[in-house]
Image (cartoon, rainbow, N blue to C red; front, side, top):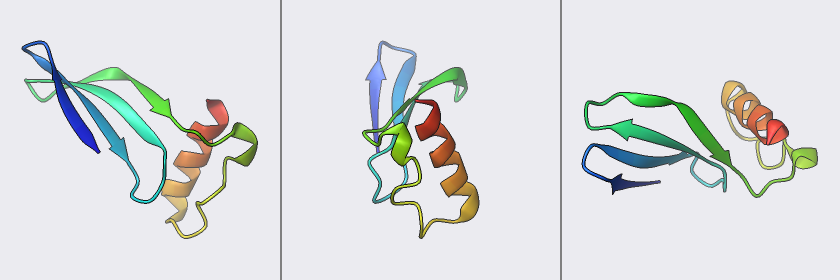
Length: 71
């Protein structure tokens, strides 16, 4: 979705699924390594975790529903 440099040695990278409002925000260092922590952001309520996932492959839908439920 987007990449922006932070300082001289790392970037904030936003990753999402096309057509959905959810995104993961990760830190990637200039060495190519990722910080093991990430942030999941979604406007979807936990009670509606499976909203909009009907047409996705099952594994991707399960990951998104799990992330939405734990938010």
